[in-house]
Image (cartoon, rainbow, N blue to C red; front, side, top):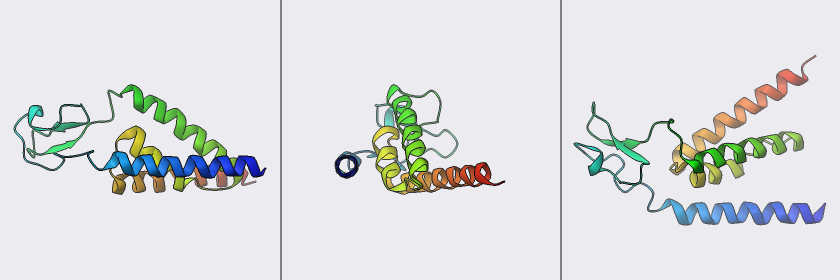
Length: 128
């Protein structure tokens, strides 16, 4: 039990550390004025909105390979945190930052929605 708890804290620390280190240069052009996609970053995570002429985060589809891995990772995190009776939000935030390229504000929002959905599922599954 102690070894698994120690592994959990080490994993949690690494995810937080790497998400903070990786989040600084994420969106250099997000919210900037643009005329085409070339004005935004060229890595595919940002695109130019034709209606408001600003750089926005990419649409959900088509997904990148990193996002498929992130979906699997999030499902496993939610599964194991529900087994343990926890929400899992503390580890979902760095996961959203690393795998889905979210900024901190959107990662927190996504974590809260995920926790709500898993709590509602657990409530209705256990409701007899």
